[in-house]
Image 1: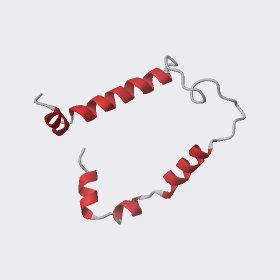
Image 2 (image 1 turned 120 degrees about the vertical axis):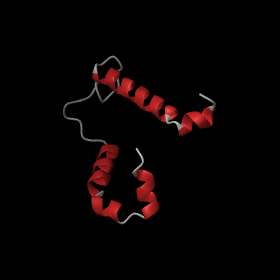
Image 3 (image 1 turned 45 degrees about the vertical axis):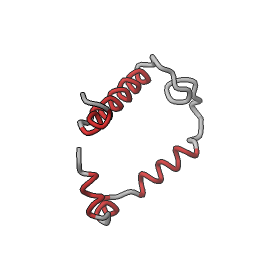
Image 4 (image 1 turned 180 degrees about the vertical axis):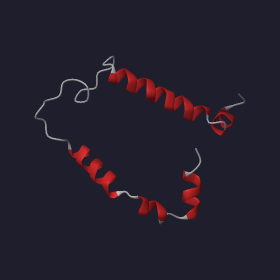
Length: 81
């Protein structure tokens, strides 16, 4: 491929990370990989963790209006697939 820089430019490393994350998630979904509290060993009456609550609040607070106010350079860099 021509070295690390060339691999990064061609998106090879990012693709490998995505593929590994997908395989990992599939293993969790099939319960081939156990994640305590996610796919095994959780309580039915368990309260949501602080992390989950903060993540939900953060997600709810984001909107397209925030993206519209972003500087043009940020929009351009985020639009690259």
